[in-house]
Image (cartoon, rainbow, N blue to C red):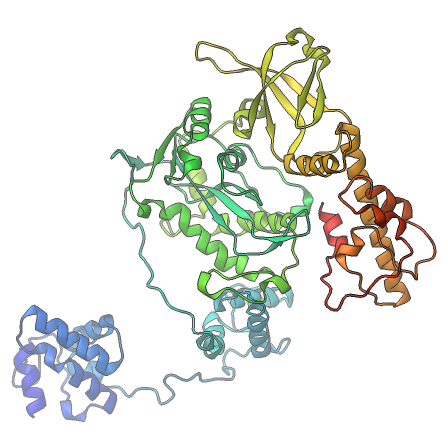
Length: 611
């Protein structure tokens, strides 16, 4: 009885084997099963008197010996002190560590689907070509399939399809083969009060929604096709409400981080959101209003005069910088969630690890920026903002934001929010009420009274076909809005600032005069050229020729020799007059095409549908 005597001395057991009334079952320690005896042997040294350092080392030795966590060791000690040997008097399962496999007789799965095959097939499809799909996301696909088969009419009955733990067990060997590095999970903020500290030492207690907004940027780990047909990684700017963790607004574009991008993200967050049926939204993105504080890091676009003074003074909020990087976890943590839940499943995903970028991302990339934006907006509205907030546990992010409003915000007039459009530049109103800006002529006959006077124009970088005109007012007052002007010939068609400057450069290189008509002609001819190429491609497909034409030759209007109907030649000839093609390309329509050995082909059908 030596083994029991050591423990009874430490636990205070009497001669009958009872530990001071805590447990009263009579059990001989030598009769414990092998698993229980090994547990007892592991925790036995922890009952001997020692100092704190020695005790901690003994706990670590027990953890290593049994291959368990510290929490498990503590639980075993508690069970022994409360129940005695009874706590360890049970045999371990003979199949421990292995899936019992098959289906339970009480809860058989439905025969309408081969679930194990579906689980593995879904995981493999989600983790090829650089994409990443987690087992939890595979389980969501299982639920979706069960819904499609009508197996989830009774939400309480989950016997007709695999549970999430079954999915995890099936995918455990596949996940282990990936050898992803594990990082410790941080607890995050768990207190009743949330206080943020600014760089000046001021402490702001967050008590309601729309009190403190946080803004940050990241470059998305997905290659998308821009308007020039090139593969690039877009930039994402997000605006997050500190109280509800709800995403208030965003800006997803190819423009690098700047004060202009910050202004556009703020504009999207402040105004009510409306989207067309193409976005297929089931929920509403009902966030709007103005913040009292904007909390950011120390990047130049946030510290500059445009955001910190110009926009802040006009909209009535205060800008503050973080005291330390950890203060920005609320706005930076969602970027990791977006990568895991959304971007990692997009074609062209490069991977979040800089040292281990996917080598197949460029080959798999096929999504345009507009398509990426549409799907990301739907993910935010129907998924991210509808997830439960970890701090409340019973409210979604949007519900927490809505419930935390001190007063219901009123929508701002878009004209009053023009300051957030940024780009402003001084100009002079010429005789006849016209303005020159970026090689465009803007006519405003209603403002002829302001001829030869200095004015300020403000515009959206994505559409400079329309500008807003202001008059500077002295004595610290806000600029006075005068009216709207539109570029001649662009009444219905938007054109971005970057596109207009690119077209102007091409025309300038060809020595042509730059005017609204020449720019508009170049765009029309380019659209006609793309349509012509689409028709030629469709005809080749119908004939079954399977020919592949090199992108560079196609962009100069070169057509295959087998094409005899002559349709589209005019569009190809016209485009060469306004874009930077070589002059001899006009006479090379019937020149046989040299087949490249490894051509790179762009899908003009998708490009034209997007742009």
